[in-house]
Structures are given as structure tokens and as C-alpha cells.
Image (cartoon, rainbow over all chains, first blue to last red; front, top):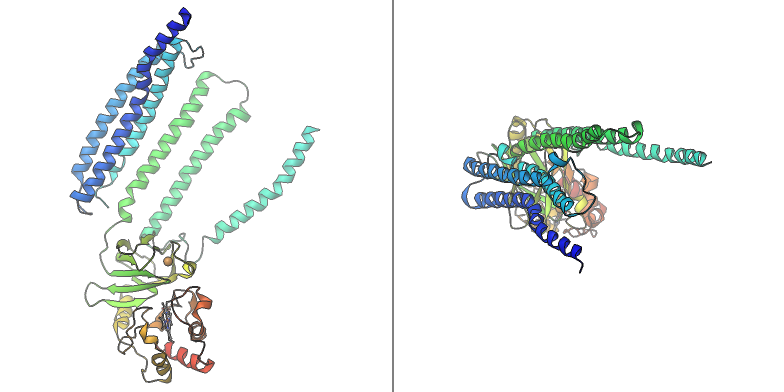
Length: 134
Length: 336
Ligand SMILES: [Cu+2]
């Protein structure tokens, strides 16, 4: 193994952490989604009669949504910094060297956080308009 | 030469496109009329669904035109290279911003009307059981005893009727497109649907879940009436038979054992395998809308039901002579 290869290897290993970061936005969205749906399912099956008012459930999901959105926003911000677009102005990462990879992962994570933000919002829209379990 | 070939190709394609368009339009238009169309809705729920459809269609059209319009613009109109800012604007504005706004608006609107579609009933309760291949009905008015009937749904305007739906053996689905959405009927379970008819008239319902050979022939007439007319009908429907149970036709009916499967309230016929026939002749159609309600159709039906409904659970009476069948049918037409 040449020295250059060795360095590359090491840099790539460091990047593993941000490979995980890539999933944080979508995972938050998924957790929010699963929690909202299962909570509603249990609530409507066990706690509330079909025509009962479910304001409390709506408030809980609303609060959970705000938390999820803030979390996604924070992940998004960190990813945005990693992308470093304001400094470099780079939207493509053509060289595939360590710096490029770093920025590319930040770029991808930023976009995924954007999608997750919208997805989480959409998941929560029903609590704005639906007032009972039916 | 390549130009010419292109020209010929386009020319050759055009007639197909025109024919396809015409066929499509014809189908589209023909589906807009008739007693079973979801267009021209006559019930509160169906009117709301129709509006929902139009709104969704307009939303989809706006998105389609805008997104493809931008695509057309950058591939056909403005084919020279464009500035980064414009490119970003087109992609972010047209590809993300616009769909986001339109889809969000549609989603909020669609969700907001969902509770209305499941509003609670405030009047009559009708129990409907899906059978192979007919409908057992029982009307439970706010005051008074339940009334058993079959193969037709009558509803008053001005209130929201509750349907308690179930099924005997297989899954069926209850659907009157002019009045509202559909609801499946399951053996051993009760599902609930409420409908609020607005305009009196005779509409058509159809089983909307494949249930066997005669599934397509499992339909019914839905008769929407003014409340007073409805009350009068229900009172008449609750009464025992009005035809003479000693008439020659009646003798054939009882002699052939029809009463083992069919009930005629006020006589010894109390079978429950087939539809209640106490007021058969008041129905708008015969055998769950498979045939018209008249003497000839009745005679043909009794002679051999299988001809009109494959797999039917009623035996043929082809050993009866034409005169006997006619006499029987004439008497059945007196079951008002
Ligand atoms: Cu059916």
C-alpha cells in the first residue's frame, strides 16, 4: 500500500461519521411518523369513542411535531455548514477527494433534511383539521 | 430526407391521436350521465366528492401545465444556455416550490372535508345485508317497529340516514354513486355509512366488490323521496300482504313451496333464504335490478332464474306451464 492510499483510507474512515449523519433527517421524520400514527391508533382504539373530542391527542402530536421540526432543522444546519456552500460556492463535487466527499455528504444531508422537514409537516397536517377519531 | 420522413411519421400518427381522443371523450361524456354516475351528484356526500374531484383535477392540471410548461420553455423556447440564476429559479420554483404550494393546499382541503364524509346519521337506520346476489334490508325508523324488505333502498331527503352494513358469506360493497362513497360489507362485522340525499329521484346502486358469478347483476334502485312520501311508503311497507291469499296465483305460490324461502307477511310463508316478497311489486326492479318489474319478466324469472343470474340460489320452476307461470306472475304483481 502506498502512502497516498493510506492517507485516503484514513480520511475515508473519518468520513464514516458524516455518512451516518446523512440518515439523521429521514430517521427523525420516520420516528415522528411512526410515533404519530401508532399513538393515534392506540388512542382511537383504546381511549376515545368515535365521536369524542381528541384535542389532547392533537396537542401532543403538535408538540411532537415542533420538536421533530426543530431537530431536523438543527441537523440541517449542521449539514449545511459541512457543505460549506457559502464559502466555496460549490454545488458539485467532481473531484472525489476528501474535501469533496466531505462537502458532498453535507450537501446530500442538507437536501435530505429539507425533504424530511416537508414530510414531517405533511404527516402532521391532519391534526390541524381532524377533530375526532372518525 | 430525414426531414421528410419525420413529416410523414407525424402525419401518420395524427389520425390515431384524433381517434384516441374522440374515443376517450366519448367515454368521458357517456360516464357523465345516467342514474349511476358520480357526476351530477344528488346527495350531500357525493356533491362534496364531486367538488373534491374538480378541485383535485384543477390542481393537477395547474401542476402539469406549469411543470411541463417550464420544461418546454427550457427545451424548446429558450434553447441557448441560460444563466445559473434562471436555471435555479426554474428548478427550485417549478420543481419544488410550486408542487409544494399546490399539493399542500390540496392536502389541507382534502383532509378538511374528511370528517363530513363520516358525519353521524340523524334519522332513519337501514340495515343492509349483502347476500348472493341480492340485498336484505331492514328499516328502523326513529319511532316504530323495524320493517323488513329487500332489493331496493328508499330514503327520505332532509336527513342523514345511517346504513348498518354486513354480509352473509362473502365481501360485498354498498355503493350509490349519485349519493355518496362506497362501503364494504363483511361477514360477521358491521360497517357504517351515512348518506344525506338532497334531490328526490330514482338512482342506481351497485355491488362494488367482486362476490361471485352474478356480482355484476347485484344492483338495486335507490329511490329518494320527500319525507312525507317516504313516511307513507314505509307505513305501506310495514303492512301485511295486500293481495288475495286465496287467489289461483297464490295457490301456485304456496303449492310450489315458494314460502320455504320467501316471506309474505300475513301468510304462512315465512322463509328467509330469499328476499321478502310482501310488497314485491312496489319495487322499481326485479331480482336486484337484473330485470324490470313486470308480469312477463316475473314469469321468465320464476321459470328459470339461472338464465338471468348465473349461480342463483333459487331453483327453476320450468315444470310449470306457461299459463301457470302467467297466473303466478300476475298474482305476484298484485303484491303492492
Ligand atoms: Cu356482491
